[in-house]
Image (cartoon, rainbow, N blue to C red; front, side, top):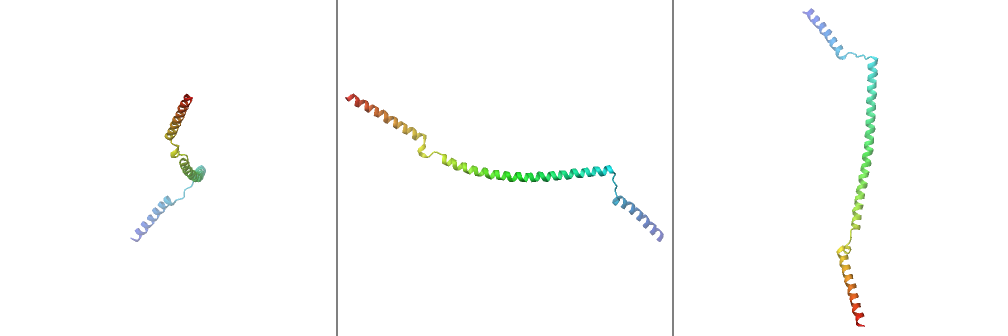
Length: 122
């Protein structure tokens, strides 16, 4: 029994060593595979750098757009103030101008008519 126990332990150890070699074994790459891996690594580094550059550019763009929005809002408030200043007052109404013109025309025509009556008297 002792012999079978030792044999089973040795067989188990051999199987474990074979399995461990498959799982934790060393992998060796050829020179071409190393060059390919290095190229892929450089491409990934370049992509990461370009993404960080794009992020920083987008951050600058966001701040610029925020400033532009602030200036646009200020311009809008100034335009609203300007509209209040440009709106005509009550005495600048076109119907009042029509009334003023009608009264002036009537007054001139009445004056001309009165002048004609005065001239006929003499």
